[in-house]
Length: 528
Image 1 (cartoon, helix red, strand yellow):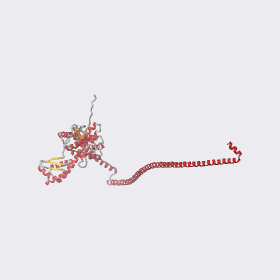
Image 2: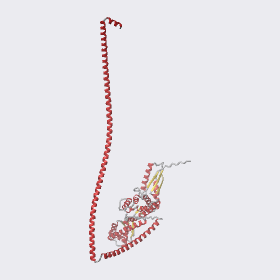
Image 3: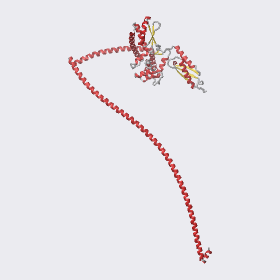
Image 4: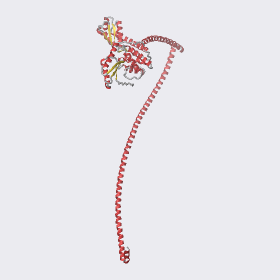
């Protein structure tokens, strides 16, 4: 450097050259720097554009993703909103329908109330009009009576006081006469009731120790004194007997049996009327169609009166008070009604006292139980005339005559047709079974009764897997015990059905027989 400086100081041209060289170097350096800076700037701009492009692309992706998520969330919220809106609309619609119905109901009720108000207003006006008319008629009647009274007094020539005295004397005589007649009637009725009551007490005292059992039939016989009377009963070409059968509704059987005519009819009342009518005709001797009709009509009235007397006496005997007057003839008709030969009236009385005895033992009302027992078979008095079973007929009759629900249910349910709703119905059912199934109560001897029970047990024991069989409740139920190792549950039901079918096929019995099959496993161990 020192050398260059020395050369420059010695040579000015050299100095210029050196300065020119320095200036050219500076320019060159600046040019290089400028080109390099420009290149770097362009590279930086390119990188910046690339970064901006990438940033724009990422921003677009982010925006699109955000928009998609926003749309998805918006759709979900819109669906939820629509569901909630639909639910609210449905609730509002239901409330609107309910409110509309209530408004319709209120409108109808309001219209009904208005209609009733109008009807009441019309009735009030009519009553007011009738009241005015009655007042006018009353005034007219009062004036007419005053005029007639004055005219009568003027015609009779007596005063009002004298007329009152005459009227009072006449009324006094009539009242005295009627009072004496009433006293006589009361005394006579008291005598009759006392006689009936005394006989009832005697009968009840006897029945406390022994019940009456009789068997009736559906035929009646009438004695004929001779064959000539039998011919007169038949009549010319049978016209008398045809007229008699037509008037009474029975069948008259006249065969070669001497001195006997048989009357057959399913209706016991008609049979009784025919029997009494034929006895009257035989005693009278005048037998022709006109006389037959006359006697039958007369006898029918007598039998109806007799039936009513029987109903009254039975009500007194059973000590059942307050019966409807139309129930008494139905009770009386039961005397002529039989069930398997057993008289239904005596059966009803016996059931009544059995019910009372059991009810008092159970601390129930004995009087109500006795009433239920007496009326439980009342339907048998009308089962020839009305369709249906006697429990339903009896229940309808008792409802019609305002009997208590206990009595009605006893009549309807004593055979188990419907469910019992009072404690008296099972008592009636038990008493009915006791009265009907005891040996001698119905047309069945003791030997036949025992034989039937043995046959029932034999039928039940004849099936495979049966250990023991017992006839209980007087033959109304057979209880069968099976071997649980040989008979399973399904076979047990089948065996019970088979026993019931075989009993139906091989035995003749009143009512129904219940088959109860028992299957049990007993596990016994001993602790020592």
